[in-house]
Image (tube, rainbow, N blue to C red):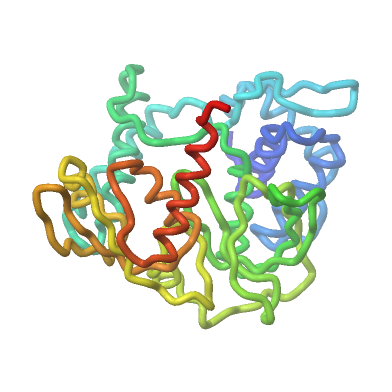
Length: 337
């Protein structure tokens, strides 16, 4: 069965909606979502008809495309997946798909080892492992780090396309400290993954600083009528140069942090540096001194604390005192009154 591009966009949109179990989806909601997606991806400003979406749902339920989607209607009004883990993207690959993927992997493997294509290495391994599992129906050989229960991943596509197409969006967001959600226009410039969590970097207006939003705190994304605002001073290749993590301050200068790591655990720091600026300064029988040149942020403190008694800060004094206070606060939780 031949499927055109617009139909695939509708199927994928309906699938993403029904995977989002944090809201209830009426047929009208699905129609609006499909219309928005077609406008965003293809510039189609003609709304999708009720009959079209109803037909899409029937095709997704059927065997015509191999989806067999378990779409049910709750209270004769709200559409959802009966199986909360279902997605049309989880359907098995056909033998033809597997053959094409194998050819792609074989082609990409030619570039492994070349410095310009080094970022492809992990991608090739993931694809090879996926193909192996599909072909043999055996357990994976590689277990990649993942967090399938992480909230906000359903917004990745919308944010990716907003950045690619340079579109201003309206984001509904609620930080952990906020009592209620806030909606605002946002100009996205970059998607960033850190410690298996996703962030979008951008700004509200030219007068505002660039900042990051965690995807797991985004509640909704809609189109904005505001024109996209470029920031030509933002360089994604250098923006995170002076930090560990995603928190960057435009007013804070990087500092030289001197760390003493015990001899037993120093090899872990040598083989997996904390930061690209890391330098090994000296070593003796008790430990090894490393330096890094970074801004002081929350992620830096958490990284240092994650090593426990294997690492401690020698300089600067401000960071040393901050870590000391955190350790003292943590210790007090275990003190018996």
